[in-house]
Length: 361
Image 1 (tube, rainbow, N blue to C red):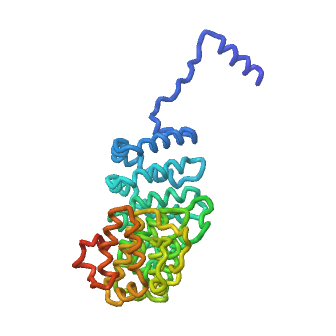
Image 2 (image 1 turned 120 degrees about the vertical axis):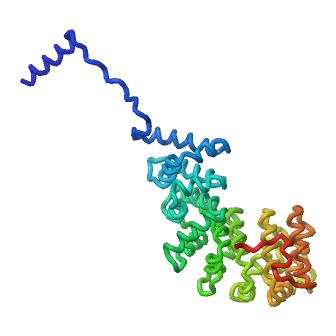
Image 3 (image 1 turned 45 degrees about the vertical axis):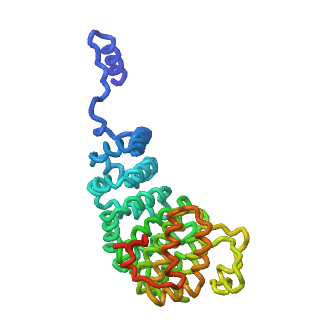
């Protein structure tokens, strides 16, 4: 029977009736499941679009595409997760795209944070960079703060960020430098500053060594920005300047060069700033230098703070920095600080708002 059936099929093909070939499907692409190669190509095309303002504007109205991009950014291999995450970095860098991104996925900040803090995720740095861009604006930053608070009211979300930032090799495949700017953005929120400045948590002390992190100006800048925001909390100045934290040497050392002070001046400086080697280099990033000067000036907002800053010779370091400084903005910050660190008079942090520093909300 099997052999007869085979004969009949052959004779039917050879007969007068012809079997039509099946034509390729013409259904829309969104109704077919693309293979890995196709997904990589499409994701690469989207990534290319995010590199220009017209391309980002085009994508802003594509809610379904944005939602798919977010899902791909956290998908396992062979999904093009890295290109999707890079596209989110570019989109989040445009403040005009924040609302469409959050509308496409209201849980985007929490989703990105989970990827950034996953020690096994290979594209955690891209997730952290997207989150750092997204949290620069008040609304997404507030959404992330609320997500952290709702996940754990005790502040373990912020603790996880600090731990990942301060732990070498936390993720062997991602350096996580962009957790620094993320923490700086979050520290604009009062609740985050309260967590960072809690004397029982020892958070600020763990951040201080990163002011001289050799591998990344992004990480250094994020940590310095965080410390600067914390310095707006005047009631903590004595604690920050006291022996429990001793923040001032960590702010002054990146600003110091190889100057040779007199013995009398040298004795006024903290031990860590005395007799620095002749090859001592200052912080190379002008924006970071400016934030360091502003943080020192903020610490003079109270009478005890002024005394502690002056007694540790901050003026000597700032004087030499001003003589060396090539950037006008940093020079201006030094000049604004002189009247507070030199012993002329103090300020209240409000009436002298023209000094270039503004308190976070």
